[in-house]
Image (tube, rainbow, N blue to C red; front, side, top):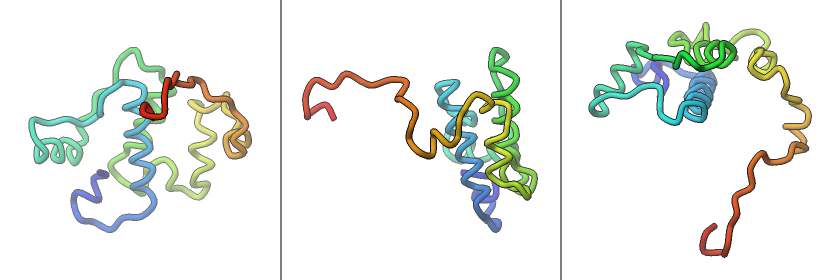
Length: 120
C-alpha cells in the first residue's frame, strides 16, 4: 500500500505507480522492499520510507524505483504533466518499444513447460 492509503489521505492514480514500483522491485530483487516483524511494523516502515536498494542494482533501476516509490504522490514519477510518458521515457526502459508492448508484439522471454492441464 502506498503511504497515502495507509494514512487515510486522499488518493488517486499515483497509488498505481507506487504499486508498479513495488512490483518492479520485487521482480528484480525477489522480495518486497518494505518488511517488518508484523503488519503494523511493515506499514510503519512504508510510511517512514525505510527502503534499501541493493548496491548491485543498476543505476537506472534504482532511479526508476526511487521515483516510483516517492512518498509524496505529487512528486511521484507518473504524476506530472506528461504522466505515463515520464515513466515510458525513463532510461530504465530505453530499449523497450512501447508500441510493440501495446500491440502484444513482443515474444515472451520465458514460456513454462506445462506437462498437463492440471499444472495450469
